Length: 477
Image 1 (cartoon, one colour):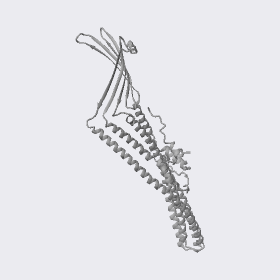
Image 2 (cartoon, helix red, strand yellow):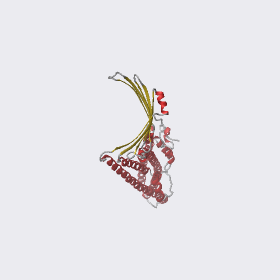
Image 3 (tube, helix red, strand yellow):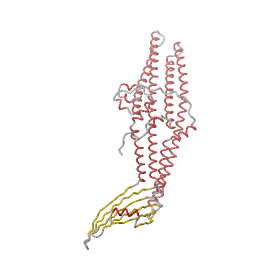
Image 4 (tube, one colour):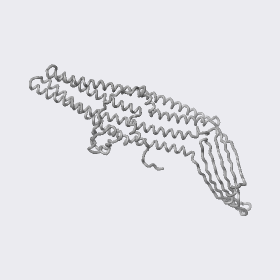
């Protein structure tokens, strides 16, 4: 159950699992909400490019009258036309149109109609699918990149939330350690006071015990402050800090995991990390678009050569209805072919654009290599941190066991007056330091495992997929 409905009240101290913390962050993070609209915008951009190949409808009409100054004859005219055109992937524009003309003079009345088909096909510049579909393919690439970026943002948010969660867990366990240490120090003070009354120790021993207790209480106070700061940082990461309304946020959290299983060999992990890397995938989309721009720019250097073919039939009669009927057995026909040529002298602008496009493509390719090199370095370091964390935890756990036994022996020796009180305090401090060192190692190992999961794509994969869809809100169309 998510914690959000309870944050403003006293129940803000209830238990909070890591899964719930991550779900809250994904649900409430404003930056993620904003970015969820990017794929929707990119999808509409793709639709805009696809619409360039939709059928275009055209219609026009008009009326007119003319009176001759020479003989006073008056002629009324009218026309109407309708047609459709469509661009296809070769760059050609197909057209089909029909016209109706009417002329009425004092002595005659006649109407004419026609049906015409045409095709205009570029032969060089702007021709063939590699060029005509480039903008649509770029829009598709931008859509893919926006989806990848949304997922990367979600993954980064989950990693940050996971780190903040384990920081809070660490802070709470540190408080528990210090509380235990304070209790032990209080017992030593009471024991020292009793021995002083019995004349078994000097007053300096009691003062040392009291100083040690004061030091541990001060450390406990600082640790409790660290818990409050870590809790606020987690609430801010989840996007729920303002919902607290001035109340304290002290949720119960899971203990740091003691997962000491071995790390997968880096040689096996690296191919998975490379395949799952979203930054590389996004840069590959940049390379793809740069290559499409280069194709268009290279084609732009060519001269404009268009082949135009037209054919049609026409008929005439004394009125509009009979004029259209005459198309069944037309009296007139026409056809034409035309070759158009144009080219700027020198083509300096087109050549410069082609050079720019080629340079940008090379830049994008080099950046992709750089991104993969950085990824390899970071992945290698994360794997080392993971391996080091496992080793630290193993040695830290052994150190805690040894220091615990050493402390028990020191207490026995102190009771038998074989060692000084300072030596007992040192043994207690060594045990406390060992416990804190082990806690540090557990926290670092948990963060390293989360970072590795971020790299190989397994960090709360199902939860992230559910929060990286486009917004459910109705968008005006």
